[in-house]
Image (tube, rainbow, N blue to C red; front, top):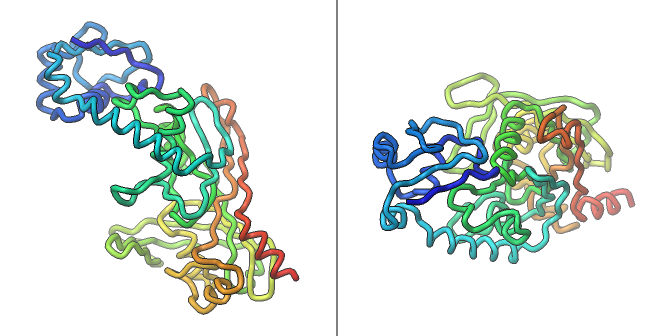
Length: 331
């Protein structure tokens, strides 16, 4: 028999999801059978699995140690903790823009993955768990039932702010803000040509998963997502403009696709941009990929556990390459 007390990080999820994390090799049939037979109980009572867990709840498993070991994956969780610590050491002290009990916001450097693309990759997800293990805010045992994770994704070569959920409540609340567009997201970027006025681009995005490309269409169609990007010029340099863009919707390669469609492709974007234009600045400043930086987050009014983030505006300084281009083009 094992009795588990629900901690703050685990609260807010359904009982069946919690059980799937703790007994991760067990199937639905086994878990629901154990619930029906009261071999798994919630606060000493029979449970269905759909109950929302609260901090302090007690989940009791009237199962043999062998069964729990068979389905629990305890060794893999301990081994995984070592992987997370290595990821933290590998990426080092990344720039933390904001941190509270539930949320951490990082200034991601260009070249770092937000999430793994392959088995051997190191990403912010692994760094985050390693960081929380290092600071003592997460224990190895908690990894059985809770994994902190990033809430928004940036392309590998896009720099700037990434939001991370340190607790389940943090992940759920930030995820809701991102889905409901309550959080405003702004980017800095250089584009080809002179953009004279503030404007916007909209349309429908269709994704080609195999080619990792997207295309823009003016009409709604099956599988297409509506997208909108607002943008305004900040500074002109002959055939180059520094823009600020607001990502009203948040889809793959959205800004790069939209600006390319207006005739002002993002500097350094070899997938959707102008190769000759990019090659010029690659030779001049070493620009090797899209020069796109998530520079500002503006949070809505919030209350309760997130009242300290109400109306919060976070900014992250641009990479040094932005300043090099600014100085070089002004001269």
